[in-house]
Image (cartoon, rainbow, N blue to C red; front, side, top):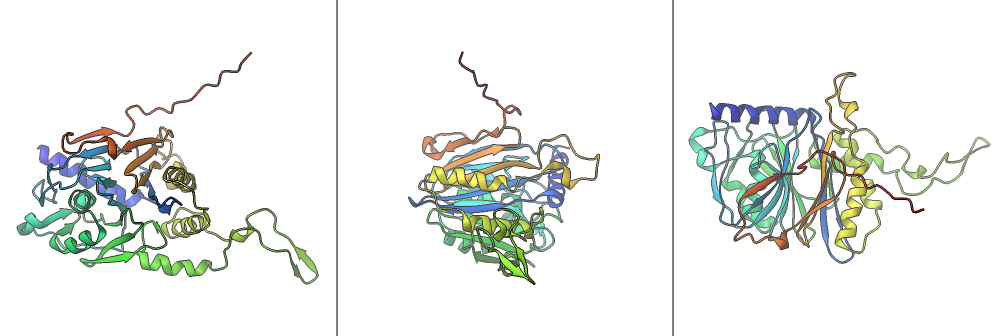
Length: 357
């Protein structure tokens, strides 16, 4: 009975995320060499139970399969901190003590894994647990690339497909997409990831916006009429403003490219949060009138991970205060495997200003 309830919960989560996720990822480097990967995670169907997870070295872990908790077994080689959705096993974004970061972004309709084979459960890894597997097992992108062929990545629900962003403190980032059961790795020099279509298509689509540039358009003459910009930032006139993945990719790419480099890792973390504020999705735009759930935003949380200094920062739709987990303060040889809600209390603190007499 418990197994049936668990699998039903997983199926509902996967199906729902397939229809309502709209993640946006942006990466930036600081002048001091710090490298930061940030992202949003969206869920417009209600409260997304999210938690931070601490995995110690030596922790025994096991993947789910479509038939239960009977997939690949693995032991954590590296201590890990992750931000998980619904269950502590489903890390959506995280970092390990070696400085490797990994996260999943939903990729509906364009990706496709190998078919599930129950006779090969010992090598079967659920897509929602790939990030946890990468983070607990590997220190570099090259190690991940070499190991992916050794596992069979499958969906826990047929309509669920994701792709992954993987980064290391050197500033290198790759995207992993699985299409027709074949893994493809792409070097991500643009530092952006959203959802579907595929990463190569998103890069090609940037060519359609070759006319965009920062600043203001010049005054021009047209048949004796003087044409002037009606306001600032007219060089970006025509940048797409909707919430579809291609439009968010274009907008994020131009915002990132024009963002001035900050001096330190923490200043860069702050800059990432400011940039990603532009990608918050209002809850009303994804539902017919009168059918919105009672949540403050479809963007349930936003994170920024400083890979160089091994720090995880996050804020949520319920509490915009930025919180930090510093891996340097965790003894991964002694700490327990544990998880805690991102918001112990769903309430926005407000600082009251006392006016002096």
